[in-house]
Picture 1 (cartoon, helix red, strand yellow):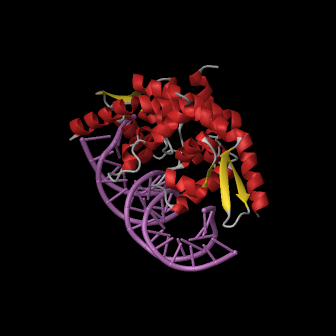
Picture 2: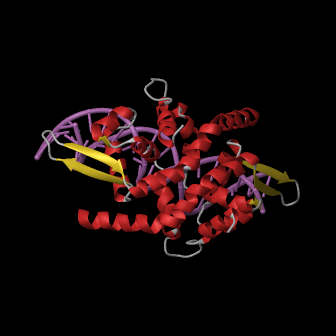
Picture 3: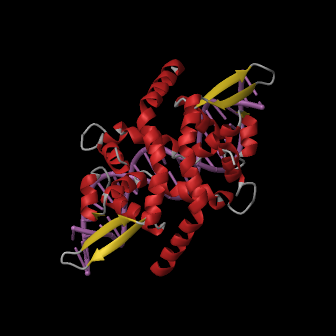
Length: 134
Length: 134
DNA sequence: CAGAATCCGGCATGATACTG
DNA sequence: CAGTATCATGCCGGATTCTG
């Protein structure tokens, strides 16, 4: 199965029907939830090693507490992250990637590497477009 | 360079400074713009072969005209899609992937394939989480 | 046919304050 | 330390109408 035919089928599956077609698309099941603003960043950080809540806050200083909590819950809900509570005093909570999360991160790596390799080209294209458009 | 160290560095580059750190992150330069609701879908469709505006509308019936126009413009701006106007009457416009767009789609394929392979697992995890949480 | 312009609602995100 | 709860808001995206 070629790349094109694979994805064309993927795209088509779930479209053209009346019962909320987008929600039934296999690809969107995954993409919609890791396309958020912080998901990839948290996954990247946790791919290095498990971290506690406060450590994540410090490692990703731009994120608000609210968004960190929510992103972690979403990742946990999808089975990418495991949450362990240590009933110490004060309590500490450790987040670590599950096997599924590590697997997803592996698939994500190709895209992240591409971004790293090509972002300058993209920025130049953007500038050219904006200049000639003006 | 390992996966973890690669991405940890990527993540850190652009953070911890005051001048709008997120905007300077190489990864976000790319991810922020293909994380939209329709970008991957249009890229997938165009990976098959070039299409005209109306054909794209029919192939992705859920998208509104406004969003199709905007998504195509963004993809063109980033250099992923080339836009060709044929001055016929009535006019027709063809969209095709550039080399950069094809390259990006190649990097994206791994993630799409992962989604196709694992979306059922993710949905099950989601259900389990929701049930035990209730 | 291929858009541009406009209006509008909802959700994602942020800021702040409070808690066990 | 690790969250929850509440409020404010921006902008994403849908529906509709108009144009060359």
